[in-house]
Image 1: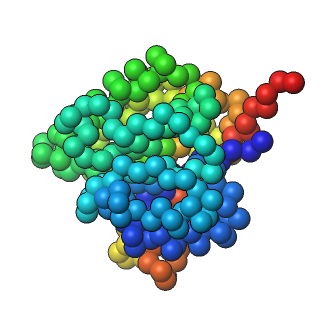
Image 2: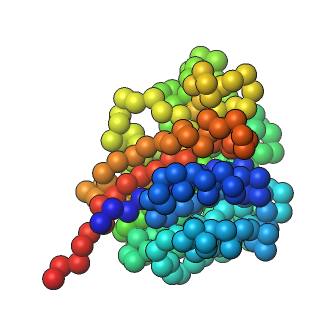
Length: 267
């Protein structure tokens, strides 16, 4: 049985709910687990009813104006966790986790950061180091793990449209990439790059200058899986349809999707 995980930074669910539901309908609701980031709304303002009408149960860690993450699922989930039980880390709503059978799903919205040495830069560095240690703990309890989200870091220069222009800027700094590599080295596979090692496929484009039409973007959104799930991995894609809308106004991100072949129970 096919199982599709999607990461989609919606840049305000209030503004984008109609677009997201239209996109899901266009795809005939083939997304099983939809992980949303940058909701920009508290939990009580999330459009639960709209997603329920589309067949999805929603689990939300919201925050007014900023951040916010959700997992919308067509399949029953359990062991929902909002945050990581770290007071400073959980002041911002950036991570929500749930279990689908024996698979642990972790949806994150990593900090954007800032230029080197600024407060937001330092926070991003601290956030990633804390998150990496948390994932090490998760691996002590689970061996099947899916991490989805807006990681706000590119893996290498293949993930940017102009490596000279964007060299050593936010999302391309060597120390940022080192942290992303450290996360992967725990035992995580970047599904898109594993399947398509030489493909340029971005997931974010600025709203200005017609960037999406020129494909002047960056790849900062990911679906990663633990090595235990690698044999089940079948495909990875970025769906440009929601990003290339003129109306309603799209998010500046496109959804990324990884397809797995679910193991069937032995008779």
